Image (tube, rainbow, N blue to C red):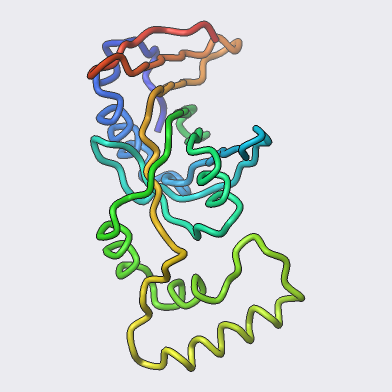
Length: 201
């Protein structure tokens, strides 16, 4: 798969959510096509970044799920703003998203929780995410204890686990070009719509 010979405003849907859906569909065969870098910052502005998986996309924004007590969860509580980056090197494409962050509705978290493999649900219960542990044996022991405790019953949604929605304020669609003259199309939210322009590479 290769990008078109050039990318201009008419090559992208006027709605950036629809444009992102198109690119995700075209990247579906690429490895980890829904993986995205999530950048957050503390209240003092110290940044951190990690890879997460896109788990939903609707007209309100993009969402992922995590432990509220993790570093990203704590930073989003202190500073509810984030940036995302998708990168598909096989296609010579990337998308950047910036916006504010809100927790998804409880029913959205509950529905996604029930779709996760049972082992992943147990692991979420036993991992004190981002906190130091003595070693792998401690995690394995915690998992074995929780597995025995839940038995064949349900694994309930923990109160420390939630979904987060990035409500976008800007998008940037980027396509690789020779001689580093890359194509960059930016969307900025203006009132109830979007303004598009081309950026110099």
